[in-house]
Amino acid sequence: MEGDHRREFHASSEAVGSFYDHMGVLFASIFGENIHVGIWDTGDGSSMFAAQTRLTDRLTDLLRLQSGQYLLDVGCGTGRPAMRLAERAQARALGVSISSSQVQSAIAKSRDAGLSAQLEFIHVDAMNLPCESETFDAAWAVEMLFHVPDRLQVLREIHRTLKPGGRVVLAEFVEREQLTGEERDLLTKGFAFSSLLHPGNHGDALSQSGLEVIQAHDVTEQTRPSMSWLQSRYSADRERLADHYGPDFAAQMDQLLPAGLSIYTEKLGYVIAEARRPTR
Ligand code: SAH
Image (cartoon, rainbow, N blue to C red; front, side, top):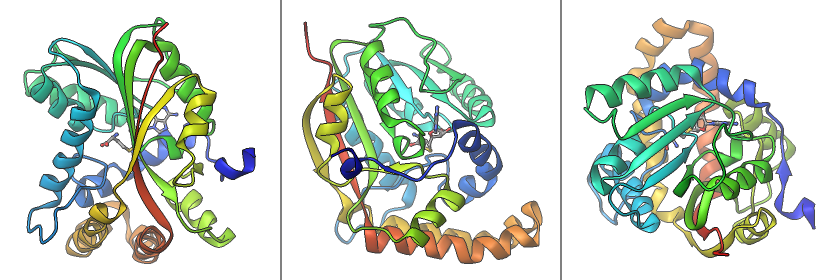
């Protein structure tokens, strides 16, 4: 039933790296330093940053790291989620990203925050990690796996580099309603998507890699306000972004962003999956 849970759209790792290098200024404007959605409470008047931090904290809690333990952050973005985790859980982390500009920025930010002793960031493809087996106490991949050309290979790398019993948390978009070819195309070309799971398919994908599912949480509804936030941030900052990227980019983004956000609202969802490497 491979076609059921692996909906391949195709973007190479290099293309994803260039995408993030190029989109850095846009994403800093609309997402801020966390390149992930937020978890909003009902009637929540808080900011996107507060909602994003709530997601980071929820994921951190699921990992149950002890002080001094070591996290693999697969697809670390600008390093903000790892910095939050380092401060909150007193843990260490290795962040990996396919975007060299993100890695430079993560190194600079963690140094400025006095967290260099706890955090390290490297520019590598998560499909082939330069790490010894059984290195990490835990791992997370936050809004990352839908980008990779081979999701199973990344999960195998997570399995290999985790210590037995080590916990994994995945946070990602899922395909709740079947996408049209046109929608798939837009997500691939506009947002560097490669594949999406259906809401119930984390078990298959994880167990193929040797990992064992603990449970999955559908938090789609709580993430929804993030979409209108992103759109309004873009509208507010459009002129500055047009100055930076040029008018063609802005004209394209005027179409692309609302189209992408409405695909999210109508067809996608958001799942947090907890798993572990079985103990021997
Ligand atoms: N987890 C971060 C960033 C999410 S954006 C956050 O929550 O803020 C997706 C991230 O996945 C980016 O950092 C991107 O560089 C990374 N990524 C995508 N494909 C990758 C690959 N093949 N190897 C390593 N990192 C990858």
